[in-house]
Amino acid sequence: MLYPKNTKTRTSIDLNGVWNFQLGEHFAEKRLEGKEVMVVPSSFNDVIVDNDKRNYIGDFWYERQIAVPDVDENQELVLRFGSVTHRATVYVEGYQIGEHIGGFTPFECVIPAKLYDGKSHLRVTIQANNKLDFSTLPVGNYVEEKQVDGTIRSKVYENFDFFNYAGIHRPVKLIIRPKTHLQDITIFSDLSDDLSEATVHFEYQIEGDYDELKIDIIDEMGQVVAEMENNQAIISDVHLWEVLNAYLYTARIHIIKSGKTIDCYEEEFGIRKVRVANGQFLINEKPFYFKGFGKHEDTYINGRGLNEAANLMDLNLLKEIGANSFRTSHYPYSEEMMRLADRLGIVVIDEVPAVGLFQNFNAALDLMNQTTAKGNTWDNMETHQAHEQVIRELVARDKNYACVVMWVVANEPASHEKGAKDYFEPLIKLYKTLDPQQRPVTLVNIMNAGPHEDEVADLLDVLCLNRYYGWYKNHGDLAKAEVGLREELLAWQKKYPEKPIVMTEYGADTLPGLHSMWEIPYTEEYQMGYYEMSHKVFDEISHLVGEQVWNFADFETNVMLIRVKGNHKGLFSRNREPKQVVRSFKKRWTEIPNYGYKQ
Ligand code: BDP
Image 1 (tube, rainbow, N blue to C red):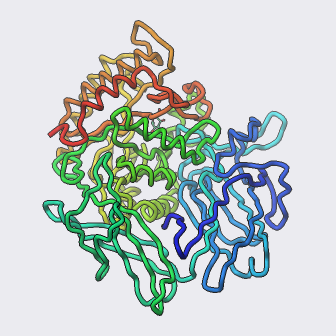
Image 2: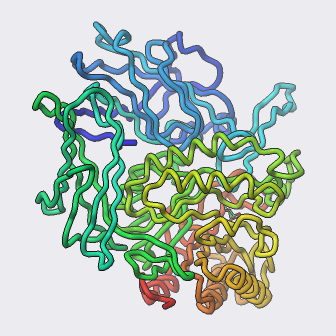
Image 3: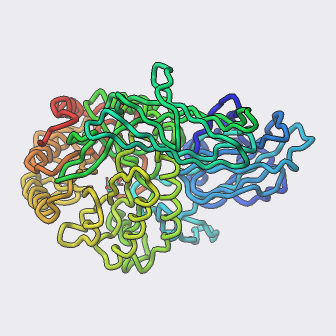
């Protein structure tokens, strides 16, 4: 899916700002009174302040008037949403013009001309909903609970460990574009053996009639370096996209009819090669070592809503500490973040919101044990359709980014329960069929599904493990943790000698300023000791090709007995102040090269 851009033939108008807002029942036919307002983009939860409203589950509404721009008969008017969490129905003047399920991917709706012809203004209404259940991704336990005052209240017990923020989380745009237009473009390259020459392939989808499609490739100096012929273009002396040293070409696309350009668009893309071989993860044929983080889109005030300054600060902190990568745990991040990573050369492991596919996860984490659901995960989940859809949408959105080097099919599913293989095999295949770059596909494995229990690892290109030796296991005993961690990693390596291993999560909750002479969890010293122990073991495992800390920063969660106002496993606090351990990470990671660490 194309990112909205202004070009000679396209205008994209920003609809961010203050919208009328309402929680609860309403009908799109009726004007929203606007007693309450909300800022777009943001999560409504923290901004709204009121405790009950913050935890509200159900329908909520946004509405604003927009001025109708000039649209001629060869153009169309489109509303485009970066994301609405978790589902949305879009109305114009009270008429439904589209809907979308899934809270982390973009969608657009064409506004029928009959709705705006002869009008100066339009009423745009969004009916959103933040309910999660066993058919959605992420997975939530949905219940309707009787309150002490006798009323019934909807509630979602998250099957995952982050606050269920909701709202119009990403930008809303009004786009004027030609009816005949580029709908999508896919760009991928083959490199010669010595990586000096690239054959760039183009696949495109064009809406409407046209005579010719012209694509020029422009380098960073603005020079045309190749032209498309027969849907491909050759770049000799290619400038590769490298880790922390990105290089982006631009494909300048013209759709021509009767000798006239009727649509143009520009897509930036990097050229690099990714492949897995002999227990190594190769980028541009060099063995890469992942240093970085699992993250969240989570900041004070904005919640999960786009915060571009925080995104850039996070990536600058990431570089400052010597890291080179992050995982979009546990959902697709904003397009703005992906474009930033692509531009800065930061490697991304790209994840769908398939989290909570473990029936008893909540019961395991939430000591209040509010879940009712028990039994085999794969007998109960009804997520197949949502899962397939979001994989399609993620690949469609992110396929051209050089920074994306691997796809994640799910985070910590019950891959040790019967039925896991049947569930995941078609989804892994789907990634492979959709992605012309054939990026590696992984599943992020949970501690319960060790090398002897897991049922799906043989389907994966890379083994990604989340392990908490010294935290959820051997809590407070780093000596025992070390033995367990080493034993398990060696067992994985022995069982799958050809597959690289990445530690995608490891960490210990730490409250900055809390100190102890002894091995006491939650102190800064314990966090230091935990990582020292982990790194000692990682360095012994030849096929362990990466370490991504859980988490980059502290983040908001639901209220749970084991959460002290959120999850505190960040190396940085929620307001991005470093904990003590940041200094030792900086030392370690500046000494570990991006390439060739374990050759
Ligand atoms: C893992 C999850 C992650 C949690 C983390 C933790 O993948 O979302 O936040 O552990 O418990 O289970 O800190």
